[in-house]
Image (cartoon, rainbow, N blue to C red; front, side):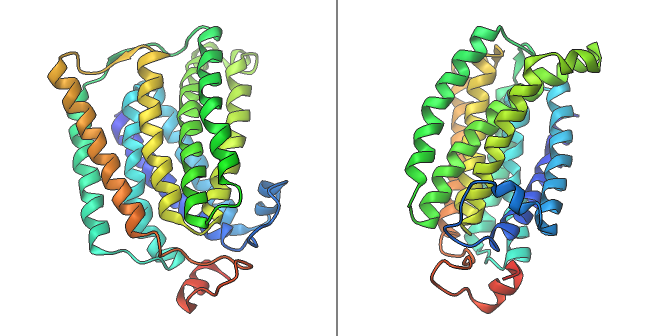
Length: 298
């Protein structure tokens, strides 16, 4: 049941991602990031994307409550399979034959990962000190990525911010799992526990970075890097912080890692093939093809 819920979440997240990217295309290039989410909230398309993401988050939270982080987050990689066709439909980006083949490879590799990995054990929470160490390690990677993204070309900026977003999404998922576990103790317990407030802060930061990445117009690099990094970091957090275990035999571990790498490699192919197909933002200095401009609402 956790896998079914995760697949549904992946579909809804894909729709939300494309809608957010479409709304971001109307944001002038080089605009201030200060108050970005407040400005975007004035756009109906952006609100629809947020509503889709909210539904996806609920599905993800339920899946994390009954399943394991190392299972649910890799399943969300399927978002890239759903997002690219939706992007072609809603933002005018082209889908090539290699995209279809790569998407199928992602699906097959994901099925292999879930079949071989056979995750077991684990806990829903960890001592505060362990969370702090995890957060510090994540900050060491995320902060430089954000600074490096400044002033870069759209595809590079989207990839760097997508990577940072994927790392934070993995941390968000772990916090969601820990917070959702408090539901059994009642609403008061949730409101008095630090997980909820950490989740709000990390969630806001990750949403802002995600919106900036999507706003570059380079949909594929943004979602591909995010969806590639998220499951890798989630597996690391799941097996270290939450003490989940994957296949115990050496051969099983190798096969598990290989299947995940194949999925990530296919995502990289998707990103590269779509690299030149992004619609152009207003104020970026070049004109988008008419059909892309119309699809992006510019």
